[in-house]
Image (tube, rainbow, N blue to C red; front, top):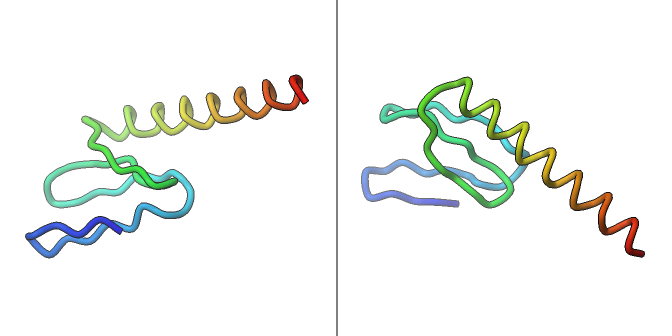
Length: 64
């Protein structure tokens, strides 16, 4: 949980998702939180992160 001095709390647990706050959009989940410029960028970022995660799992399985 991220807690900011302005009273905003962001739960970074759970699956990757887009969070819209008064100051902009964020990609949140899996312990991370970072700003993005648009809904499209957020969705692309989530797709890219999921693809990298899957690629890592496949690589681990091949090396087992």
